[in-house]
Length: 192
Image (cartoon, rainbow, N blue to C red; front, side, top):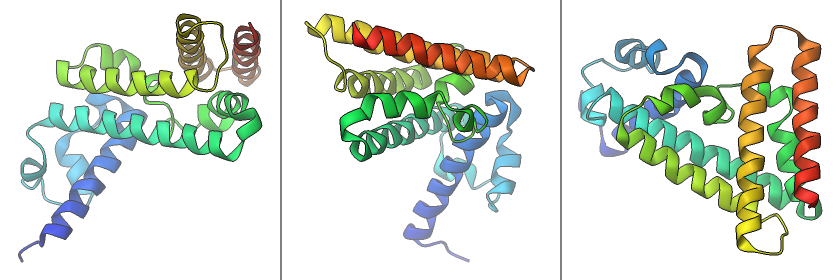
């Protein structure tokens, strides 16, 4: 049965979204192409009609995940105009975000994998990080662009690191303590 262009485009998006979630859950090496395509309800052979390679899929899945993360942050900012920055930080450092890596920050879920990924993946992630930094920076005050950039870098690095640590520990109280300490630290830094 011939697949229409629209169906093909929808299938591609379905595979990309599923891969983005599964990579954040399992890592790049924890998901094979055959398993991904089976879960998507498509044939393994159809993968290569949509993507050049698994590396191509990884790069595109990371770009899509970061784009989704950014859209979520922008939506939070729009909904909480007076406290947009605080709302984003609270959302990113929440127990719900910690406990749902498949929907959350791609860097917190895949940072070490990304650091070892091919150049196209790292390039897509770099573009996404810059966009997130611009989003955060646009919500901060400071006496210079350099200071705002420094604060946005510090904020994002603290968030990603805190999520990694909070997910890594096996004590719920310590995990909460990590998230709360990171949020308090960011609040102090943002106020300077």
